[in-house]
Length: 72
Image: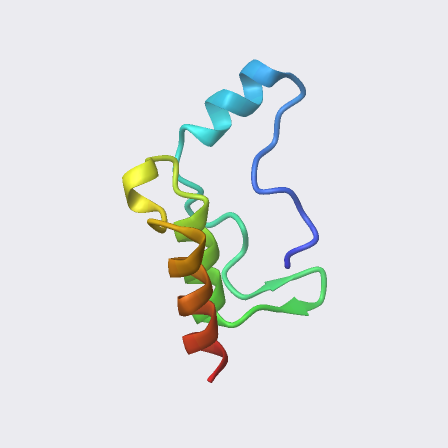
């Protein structure tokens, strides 16, 4: 969606440490490299990438349902 990876790191330990922190403003809110990403979709992406499993979608079906709702 954004043309960039959600976490930066040159080693497994750096990536693991980066994934343990919330993404905050990364990926960018609605634009990156000329791409426009709807706010509703950004919200779903950030939820799907949450560092705490309980904050993510309960299942892929739940994510797909939200994606379908957003596309309407």
